[in-house]
View 1 (cartoon, rainbow, N blue to C red):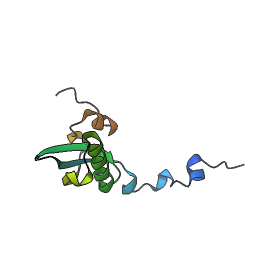
View 2 (view 1 turned 180 degrees about the vertical axis):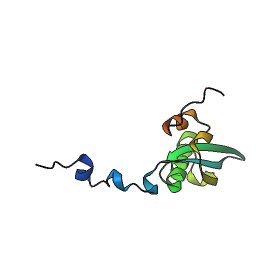
View 3 (view 1 turned 60 degrees about the vertical axis):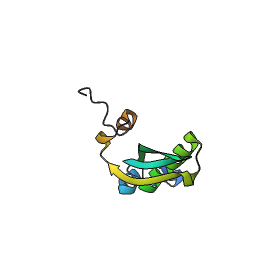
View 4 (view 1 turned 45 degrees about the vertical axis):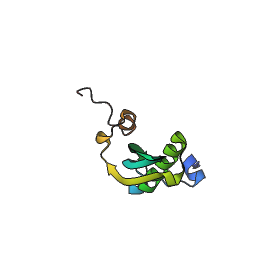
Amino acid sequence: MIHLPTLGEVLGLPSRRGLNDMSIVKTIRVKGELKMGLRSQSFTKDVRALKIEEAREMVISEMGSRNKLKRNQIKILSVEEIDPQEAQNPTIRILAGVGEDTNE
């Protein structure tokens, strides 16, 4: 019998049998401040990422792009992994497989 390689084998991706904690997408909450002139605006953003460093980078990139700010104008105060059900954004909950709670 001839064995045909899977797409993952061809691309050199790890098999799904060897999943570890680093390959599981987490829900992460990032809190920080945006410096806009003499004022500062606090923010909280929930994102899905593999690592905390990746979530931090995503938020800095998105906030800088959305508000036309440089990286030195964005201050990250805390980054923490949260339970997907605690996410404020319903899209994040759906992506995490938690879905919408109709009792709220």
